[in-house]
Amino acid sequence: MKKTLFRRAAAGTFAAVAAVGLSTLFATAASAHSAGPAGTASCGDDGTYTITWTVENDYGTPVTLSNIKILPDGGTHANIELKAKGNAEDHDSFTTTYTTTKPVDLRLSVDGLWQDGPHKTWPEDGHPANFTSAKVHLSGDCKPPATPSPSPSHSSPAPPHTPTPEASSSTPGLPVTGSSTTLPMVGTGAALVASGAVLVVALRRRRKVTFTAE
Image 1 (cartoon, rainbow, N blue to C red):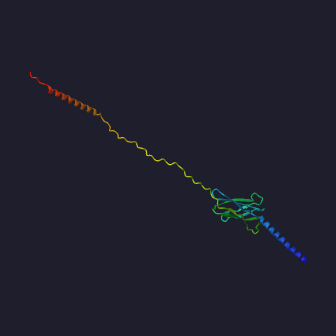
Image 2 (cartoon, rainbow, N blue to C red):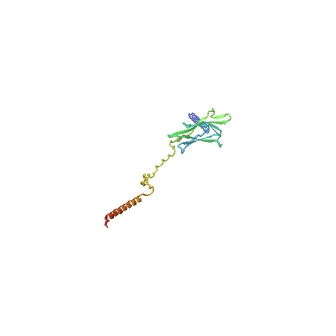
């Protein structure tokens, strides 16, 4: 009875260890093929997010990345060919832009198909495996800097308008033409008056003459 129980326990333990070992083996083989998509975002001066996406080959054979999309609505990218891990071309990066005034989470989704041998691929069915990056959070508050409004200029008020006084126009005197007749007329009058006086005196004297008869 004791031997039977021991055998059953030993068999159960072996089965559990085998299951764990097989699962670990397959998990290791599967996880060795990875495209490692990731992204980081930065806010530009124009109020637009720039997201830098990176992909890399974590396996020792070349991989073709296809069906590259930025989810949910960030656009697409052409296929990328990566060399085997350990080469200078085993990783690549590209940028996309995104404008939003609301919070949004972006992801990079890629399909990878490795060429594991002359006639062997991974996945073995020839259908690329999908890899998706972690969320790249855009807060929605990326805005261009506010342009300060020009301060009103405090200009001095213009001085009141003072009308320019017009030059007073004096009435021009009548032009004097020819010689002045005033003095001759005065002289003539005086001469006439003097002559009249002399005449009167003469007449009076004649009246006083007494004729004496011889």
